[in-house]
Image (tube, rainbow, N blue to C red):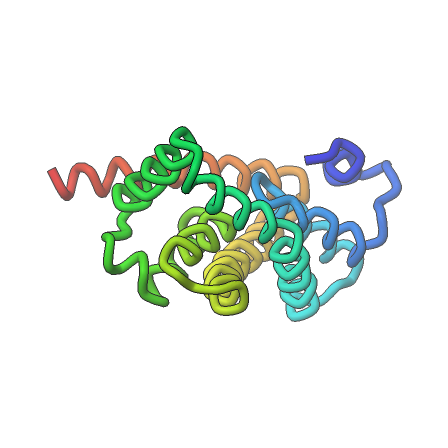
Length: 193
């Protein structure tokens, strides 16, 4: 995350970038704490939750148009470059270990869940590997990502209200985003084994 966007969240004395614009820029970051930081920044700027969802959706659309050429290039190169083909097979195996079976990850619900549990880039890559074109593939990926955004937005806003401090809220949300997935994997492993 760029330091000039995070600094206003950590230091209340620092002037903030405009709420909607600053949130949109944070939402463009495909990994990390962009969602909780963007939600807090937007809320401090007076942006409503429905408008935050619109901003996040627009950031996903921008992501789609920026990343689609790279995804297509990697898929094409994977046919001729053995290392990339092997990387694609490993990605498929990782998706199956994460809970997406070969058939489930090809169906719409499976692809939405890939995007929800991993990220929209992986969701779109899985959709492309399953034969979905640009529009349906990104629609599935964005659907899963919007569900993830809604969960994080509601959690962040609730926690901000409960704690009353943006810095503490951001720290707790980032910690949860880092720790919770590994705890869930361990719990699933214990139940399965």
